[in-house]
Image (cartoon, rainbow, N blue to C red):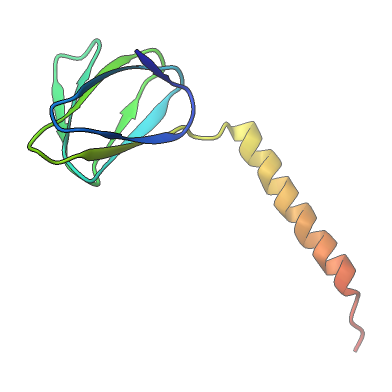
Length: 108
């Protein structure tokens, strides 16, 4: 069983079923062909067309399959943590300030 703990993309061949475990909350995005998703602790199955998304919870298990003779591509996007987003924002601000400082001050 493959474990999803980071952002990743891969293809599913028609007729293939892939078991997975979600290690971190993530979002599944379908591209290419339709994907049938079965989730643990859920009585519903999901038939996702290209462009559809599904939010996944940490710890749940999935079974993904592609049908209809078309290969599907799925992407798992793990959101960055809020502290990581804040650090990235501060780094961008620091880079902008440094670029302004290198450019020198203009006087009129």
